[in-house]
Image 1 (spheres, rainbow, N blue to C red):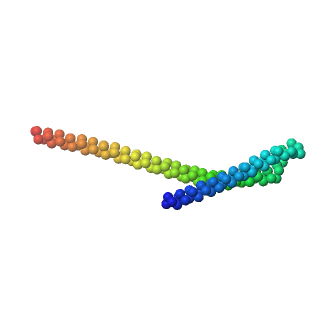
Image 2: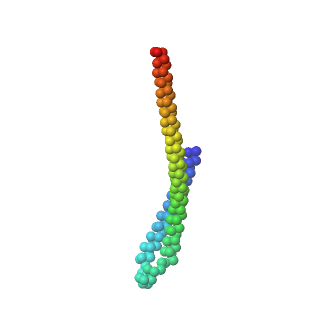
Image 3: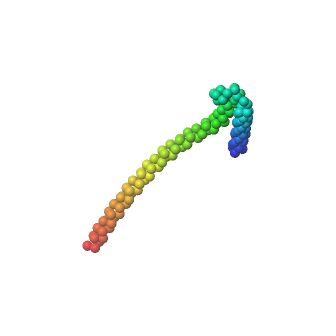
Length: 137
């Protein structure tokens, strides 16, 4: 079972590394295009600020989609983990309440047993005194 798990972990790591490489490549392309865009003389400052070049816009969209793909898997895993932890918290809470009820029941039973033992001990001591009194008379 550990071999299967380690293969799964290794394949996940390979997928993660591939996704990271893809994101890094996208970011490098974005930076190159951004720097090249800054080096080119623009027709005017206002028009360059308001509209992005189609190439730059496509690069931004590619980087955004890469980040969403990489982050999407992580977010879904985190959401699954949060759901499991909430279910575990609810289970622990209900088990804690059950244990408290059990302890309360045992405490009541113990008190009842102690009262019964005292009553029996008192009755036995009275019988003993009565028996001793009858022998002495």
